Image 1 (spheres, one colour):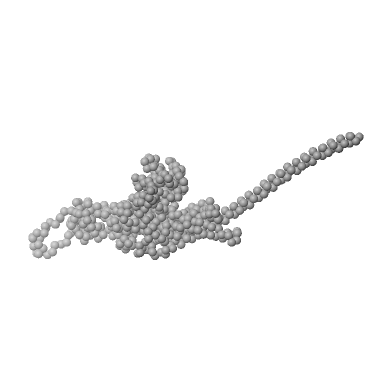
Image 2 (cartoon, rainbow, N blue to C red):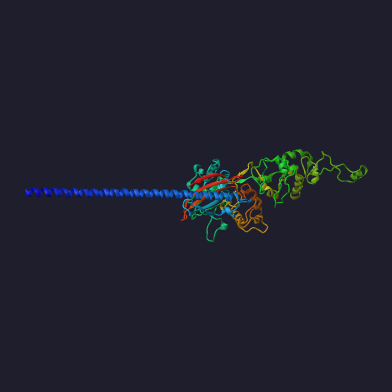
Length: 524
């Protein structure tokens, strides 16, 4: 009996130990699972808190970026200079702070950069020649026939909504569009390279980046937003030579510094111009004839290059004059010799006034006698000085704004060198001129030192004063350039204490009207 009891006790104790072990293991597993769940919960809470903090930080820096954007808009509204240059306050990076709004006493930093869209080539206005130069600047080969085909395709695809729309043009490559990497600097022209540096320049004078430098893409060099107002340096509306009436043309005067205040066209000259106009570019103005076909047809029967004096000035004429009194003045049907007539004599012809008459005489004095009466149509309406004097007061298109003009005060050498008639040396001369100290009598000095530095161009005619810009270059360049801008890209970022941009907003503004208009907006 004792033995049976002992055996039962041993069995029970053994079972109890096994059950206790299982219970302990189960308890440990439960504790482990609970620990994992707790850790997961804590991690989730941490992630949630971190997400909330990041969201809050991003929201705060978003408003910091917007505050920088709005501040810059205020700066742009107060910019009243009649030109736009890199020497003005808006061209410098703007840095500022705003109150946190959540954490009392904390300040949020923002940084803003402003880019003149007129410092780039406008894809919607550029012709095939300019697009070809632009493609070579972006790395395309001058000798590759596909370059010309691509340029033609780009022009055929105008207009574009964004520069990145070029990706849809057949033949466009990622390298041409975006470059090899984000370009910080471009190749400098030969005249501006440092000792030992190399610079590639194509046969057309277009500088290209070397293999060791970042290659800019079209997104760095092109735009669709460049804009300028159709007003002269005094804020008056430009005169459209293709549509203006004769009265408007006779009121057109040369600007200050170019014989300012002098009328350019007489009544007859204005009439002659309206009979010839279909101008596509400013250079065509130098081909305007003082005597149009209509005017020539009206005077053709009354002009000659031969002496029509039948009396030969002999003694008999003198006797006749003594007997019969002075001879009568030349009749309306009698011919005049265009090689000997003076201004007053020319004015006796229909549709010829003092303006045209003086141009005929001046041409004859400088070029010699006319070989035949048709040669009178070789007399040109405008002198070089008159062309330069009115270039800032005229246009060839209607509208309150003009698109696609390159600002000579902000465009880099690489872009200026792409323009018709230009090369890297001339482009560098323009940049050097605008960065030098202004002369003592410069109107630029009427602005305070805090507002402007350098010697910016205040009108287009000032380009003609440069030794490097001859008249042929000037008249080719005049269609493509301006000295101011009304379209700007504003990029504002909220910056953390480590200097990182947490939130960025980009807007492109149009300030041609009374109110600033945001044409494009993107928030990152």
